[in-house]
Length: 484
View: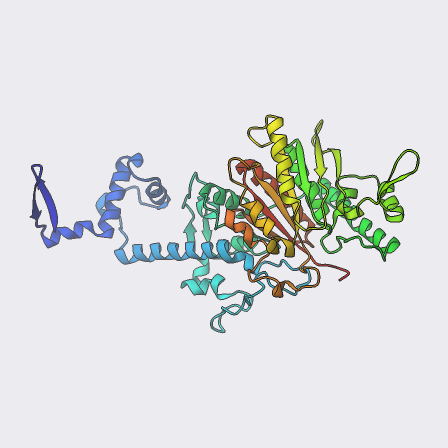
């Protein structure tokens, strides 16, 4: 039943013969679209243009001779595409649960859920949970060679793999998704309300190779990692009874921070304010801040007390792992250096967070950095403190307020999977220590600390995200505490 409008207000039903209803079937609709496309390709949507252009047709065939798919076939094709998109979405949302994040292989990514408990029948692959198994979505092994047109552009043509315009088999799509989201790097981004940010992350991850280092970059990374490891080894040997809060087990933090700084400088950053707890501070002071080693060793032997010109003791000073430092660091960008300041930190974990944000905001104000692209804040956290200290959430909630924002902070978790003496499985209810950051829509990158190349790449991506969107970003470097 259809309606015809008479005059301005009169409406009467218009009966349509049953035979004419067939004109509105799916098959006839496709034929009408094909006819319109043949007359003028620009008159139909781009998706129809792609579809008809890919079809092999006999140029001599008339429009009446062109085979039109039945409604059942059209429905099957549409259903297959929907199920494929659901599978891809599942990798984007849950793929991080399958990542190899723990260097020790003890904990699963989600501490409180056995990632294999959702496994269905015994026919399913042993290494794949049910929510990532193609069989869950109605596909069979024979469907793995089925080809799909990935042309679902999602916002500005940056929808990752599904918006790439490629034709790929189902097994190839699954392989790309596994490489993107189930390796030594996991990402949580589907909670972000901004579609542009989501698509930006998809474009970084959903590719054949997320990152690749040439020989020069690899040697530089090895050099930086060697400095980090040997520094901790020296202190552990020379001052084995001295409290020093070593970085062993999360040594990749040092080359990661340097990669972050290098990328930030390339993107226009001129000043970085850093805050961090005790863990790893001495290594950061020596290898990132380049504090003279003779000063640091003197503090190990003589302490940090201040003495005036006549030799009188002015005070006992503070412990060496509370001290800050300031320096202008040269970079690999020709003619560019960057000013870095590591703020002093008290014994109260995370208390330095708002101090760092305030210093950065002040520098932006007095230097005229209205875009907030030249002065950046970086805060390093411990895993237990990030999920347990209230000041972390309080500071995060200031991140997007007009009067307090600093244009995004890079939060780095030196996650050694233990809070003082507490196993993480008994110290929090959330799967990750970073889950508090999702409240403000910050993307979260999880990375295995025993994969230094992945750590360096993720830290570079974090710097790029901050400079592109002016929003907080979190990097969770999962390691361990080597000496208990």
